[in-house]
Picture 1 (cartoon, helix red, strand yellow):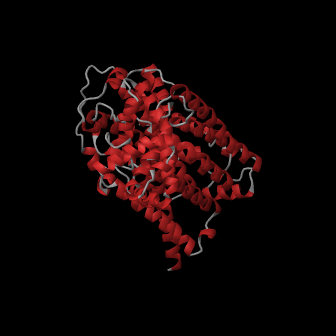
Picture 2 (spheres, rainbow, N blue to C red):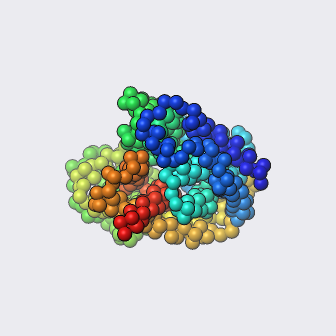
Picture 3 (cartoon, helix red, strand yellow):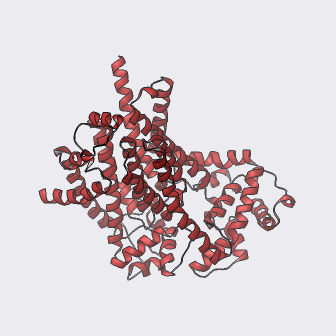
Length: 527
């Protein structure tokens, strides 16, 4: 037990060294507000708190042993990773040596680097799970160090973060979700530290993380706004704030221009995300049956698409219930629903590069079509799409978490080649167990949102928000705006599914428990 503790300590100690927490006590230049924060937290620095305090060492060792046991049992139940269509896209990017694809190539590069070490799928899943658990442990210990929640709430957070099956299932998929979640957790935790005690190295770290995250998922496109909020609330000097803000953007821009150029080479159109045009047209089509569209006023290049749209609604006319069955992606996912048939009328494909070419060639037309419909019918768009996607946000679809391997017993050729499988057959303890496990998670996510918003409103209505300690108040502003940006991006620009909301759920749980604790203390004092 002691040896395991030492191994864990040395491993995580390197992480705390990188983030400059171990040497907090050596800093000599501190402002008054920093000193007050230190006194409220006690004399012990973060390294000592995490690795030297007995109760926290027990937390750490128990979590490590628990993670190993959980992973072993899980892989006995699920010997193979979970695959969906996106999984094969990531793998095909490597198999066909593609410089650009439907999704950012960062995760494909991650798969490639793991592939250089071993072709084992178990090793890949183990690395993803290890990275995610380390980031969660970093957030957990940082949170209890900085905010000092009560014992009951510490226990709840500990169990949720480090013994939650959702993180095993998230890591068991050949998808970017786990890696992106890891980076986002570290990114947000860094800003909590910056609000407490700003350091230059933290500033550099967040910039690098933003740049990396952007190569893995386009969701990170709004992260510079999160950075801006965090830096405004921090105590860095103005010139340092400006530098920190520009750092992340400067690391995003090379990938942006690279992707645009490679897309131009493949499709002839300089687009950053060919999926963006598909998403915009899909969103607009949700209201089509409730508006009048004069085809003669449409951009010329979109009129053939509009003709196909009219034919579709005359023939099928999907009901509201049918449109609601998919998480805001009906016209992308359903093979006969306008967008894919139009593409197949114009272009044929036979492998992933030609498929990307086909998707990319129609994307500008879809972009113009969707933009025209939305800009000319904003009220209908808000009613028939944004309202539906708002509901989807607060009650996100289980999607991948509902069934294993899309209920299939076989996998496709890209995965067979990549992982050197002898056959296409895969198996698991159950295709439906995960759906039963996570059935309550969307409801829990909605409840957490309600409680978080409700408690923030309580502090504002009772005029107590300004009376909160500055660090805690700034933290609430920061996480509230992060959640607000996530909500806006999710509702307007992307399908809303549970796997995309795991990290917001982590943040919501932590700060909702803290807010409830604060309100309880205030009420008990008044009583």
